[in-house]
Image (cartoon, rainbow, N blue to C red; front, top):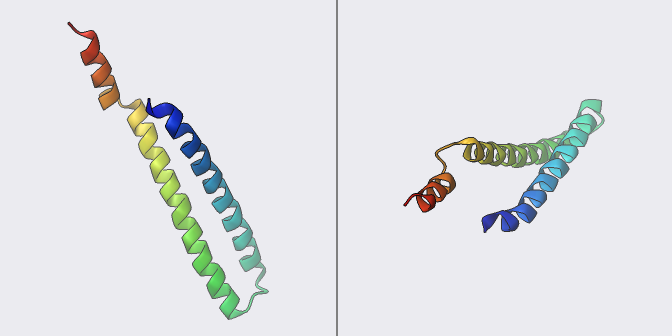
Length: 86
């Protein structure tokens, strides 16, 4: 049964997304203040891009899960339907 196995991974994925988003917001705030050197700003920008990509990936995975769960023709539904027919 895949649901119990996926739940801890989902929780970890959500926590990682929230952590990345929080760090990204703090990074943007520091950069907006304009107190960083050029080198620090470039490092912050690079880190921000990496955080953005992590968040984007997590959102894409969440969107895929929602599509799979809401799709009436998903493989799980088809398998269940096939098992019930004589």
